[in-house]
Image 1 (cartoon, one colour):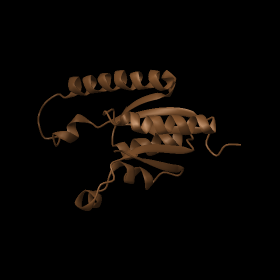
Image 2: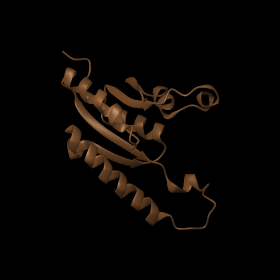
Image 3: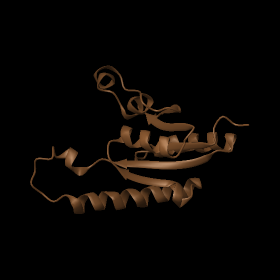
Length: 143
C-alpha cells in the first residue's frame, strides 16, 4: 500500500512549473496517487496597497481567466482531470493549507528557488506552506 493517495501540486505558472510538474507526475505514478493542481492568484489589491480608488474587478477577472487557461494547458499535458485543476484567489500559503485539508491531501508539492541570505529571512511560499500543513511537503528545487 502506498503512503500517498492524493497529491496537491502548487505551481506558479512560470516557465519553471514543468520542473515541479515532471517530479510530481513521476512520484504520483510511482505511488498510484491522484494529482491535483492548484494556482493561487493573489488579490490585485495587495499589489497596489489597496489605497488606489479603482475598481480592480475586471483586472482580477482577467488574471483569473488567464490562470485557468494556463493551468488547463498544464493539466492536459500532465493528464490531470479538469475537476482536479483549481485556481483560487488569496494568500498562497493560506489557500494551499485550506485546500490540502479540504481535499484530504497526503503530499503537497511546491517549487523552491533555494533563496539565500536576506530573501531567506523574508521567507518563501515553500517555507510558508511547510509551516502549517498537516501532511508531508516536498519542495522541488528549481534550477
